[in-house]
Amino acid sequence: MTKIEQYVKEITLDLPDDEQKELREEIYIHLQDHVKELLIKGYSEEKAVRHAIESFGNQGKLNRELKRALFPFYKLIRFVWCVIFVTGLLCFVSYSAMEYYHPEFNNSLPLYSVLMAMFLVTLIAGTGEVFYEALASQFNTKWLLNPWIFFLVPSLVFGGIQTPMLFKHPEQYQDSLLLDLYAVPIGAFAYIISRQLFTLLFVRNKNNYKRTKVN
Image 1 (cartoon, rainbow, N blue to C red):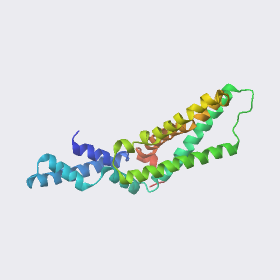
Image 2 (image 1 turned 180 degrees about the horizontal axis):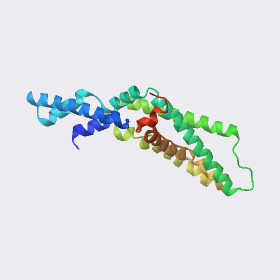
Image 3 (image 1 turned 60 degrees about the horizontal axis):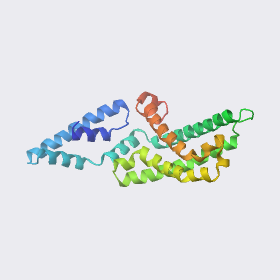
Image 4 (image 1 turned 30 degrees about the vertical axis):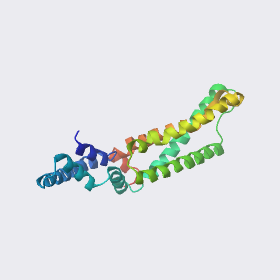
């Protein structure tokens, strides 16, 4: 894959298939024409490609602008989806663990517990998304802006900080209560998965995404 092809691929990443194909062709042709013009002016091929790419713009920023243009409420709908997904998963895991260790009790979760879990997920995930967008608008460091790194690594660090409590007060984390200690890393992992599922189910398939009435 050439440098231009990689650049174009990053610009159109996670767009619906139809738009992705069309935009890739248009951008690629435009860049190739620009490179040819620069070669005629005496640029070396490497410098011509680099200059054409730099003049076209930052690929991450262009990708976000395209998503915003195609799907005005893309991020909001994705965030709501992720919050519901993570809350549901955490509640399911908690219920399943309690049923496994204490089947003699009524382990159904009261509504206020579910709402509190949803509030905490919204607060933590929302804060993370705000910081993520702030960094994305200022930097183009791929490894830093990788969701797996940005969301999961801090949660694992937090889980690591919490781990000594398991040894200091082991009686407080018996059976299913152990999950409470690592709720943040588990939630972060689920959040990233839900982000990718959203893209796979609703964005890459244009017809499915239309059903969300975002367009």
